[in-house]
Image 1 (cartoon, one colour):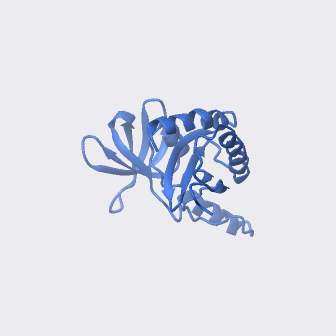
Image 2 (cartoon, helix red, strand yellow):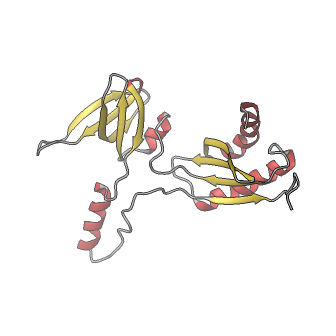
Image 3 (cartoon, helix red, strand yellow):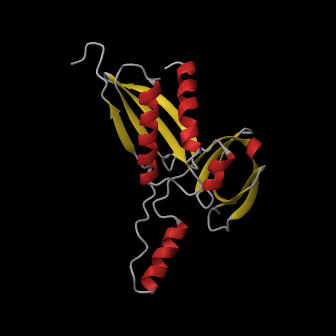
Length: 199
C-alpha cells in the first residue's frame, strides 16, 4: 500500500485511538492470499485490555466502512497490543519497560544488556548484571547513544520470583504464571466485501 494510503488510514484511525487514551504504535497493510490484513497496534502506560481492542476494532470498522479507504478488495482488520519483545524506539516505550531487562546497541559500538531502572527525558538509568560473582553496577546511558534497543524475554523475572516466594510463605498460590511471552491482545474483524470476480 502506498504512503498516501497509509497516511489516509492514519488520519482516519489515529483520532479513534487517541480519544480512547491509547497510542497508535504501528499501522500496516500486508497481503494475505486474496485478502489483505490491516493491523493496528496500540499501547498505553497501563497496557491494553482485550475489551479495549474489541471496542476499538468495532469503531475502526465502522469508520473504514463509511470512508472506504481500503477499496473494494476484502481485508481483515486486526487490533492488537505490541508483543513483549517489540523494539524500543520512543521514550514512552522505555518508560513502559522500567523493571525489564533490555539489550541496547550503542552508536559507539557494542551491545549492552541491563535492567532498566528509570527513564527521564534525556536517558536511562540501568543496572548492569555482574559477571563471575561481581555485584551489579549502575550505568547512565543517554537516549542519543542508543542505535536500537529491545526488551529481553525473561521466563522468570526477579519480581515474579519474589512474588512466588512470598505466596508460598503465606500459604497461598497467587503468584500466577511467570511466562513473559507475547502478551498481545488480538481481535480480528473481517471485511468480506467480495469483489473482483471472487465468488
